[in-house]
Structures are given as C-alpha cells and as structure tokens.
Amino acid sequence: MMFDDVFIISAQIELLKKYLENIERKISKIKEKLCKVNNGSLNIVLKDELNNLMRLRREILSSMEKLMEIQNNMPKFSRVNRLLHQNIMIEYKDDEVSMLSRIKRSF
Image 1 (cartoon, rainbow, N blue to C red):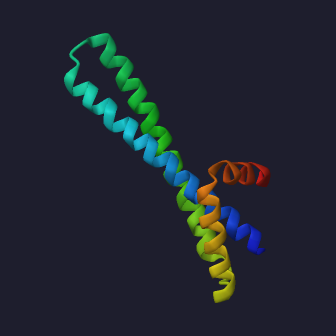
Image 2 (tube, rainbow, N blue to C red):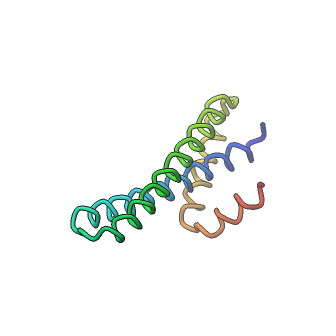
C-alpha cells in the first residue's frame, strides 16, 4: 500500500468519528424528548427516528472497525513518514472541505 492509502484511510476514520459524534448528540436529544413528551403519535415518530439513528450508528461503528483493521494491517512506515502523515492530517483537519473532497475522489 502506498503512503497515500494510509492517509486516505486515516482521513476516513476521522470523518466517521465526526459523524458518530453528531449522531450520538442527536440520539441523546431524541431520548430527552421521549422522556418529556407523552404524546402517542409523536412518540412513534421519535422512536422511528431513534431506531434509524441507532442503525446508522451501528453501520458507522462497523465501518470504522473495518478501516481500523485495514490500517493496523498496513506496513509500518518510518518515523519520518509518520511525522509527515501527522502534519498532513493537522493541515486537513483545518480544512475539512478539502478532506471531504479528497475522500470522495478516492472512491
């Protein structure tokens, strides 16, 4: 695998972590609403949305697990390459749009 592949997988994992954080916040808000609301039809809608978010959460966790397994099985790079990779990740974290476009181009 090329150094570029390592970078792409790391970027994908970081992006999935952000998605997971957002989903967990939404799940928390829905659970709070379910505790407060006592309306049958609204509860059904909230439970459906909660189930969809939980399913999406499981899918993201599964994808992250697969990517991390791939990442762990990649050949280890030299210290210089790892430092370079860390610097690139920091630059990309500052510019999430570039990271997203980079990931989309990889597929």
